[in-house]
Length: 133
Image 1 (cartoon, rainbow, N blue to C red):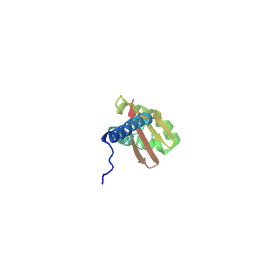
Image 2 (image 1 turned 30 degrees about the horizontal axis):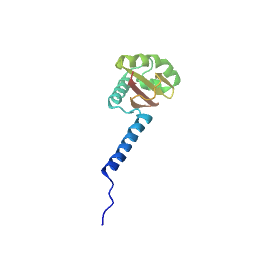
Image 3 (image 1 turned 60 degrees about the vertical axis):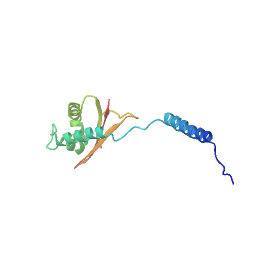
Image 4 (image 1 turned 120 degrees about the vertical axis):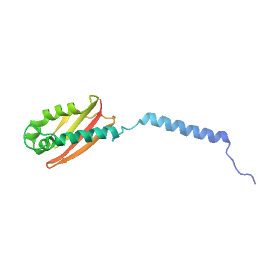
């Protein structure tokens, strides 16, 4: 009895069609932004550690505690917070710091790799994003 066999050229053609389809699909759908880039996560974490230990311009707590304490505290410290972040981060990074009372920094664009860190204070959580400019 003879076995039915596919010709080698038919198998090669099928694999070729699948390969072309996979590559085409990759171009059409694109690549998702890689959230959680390790270097950017490290920048965000380090920035949070610096801000968590900085003294605020007003009050007797840390800078992050002051911006999470109240809307007035956020308004009072927001400009100083932004100035401190600019001095700490490398020039090629953009940032966004978000609390329940407000946000400092820039809108995070879609489709870019970014790093993130969250820091808890007695009054709420601060979320920090950084990405390459």
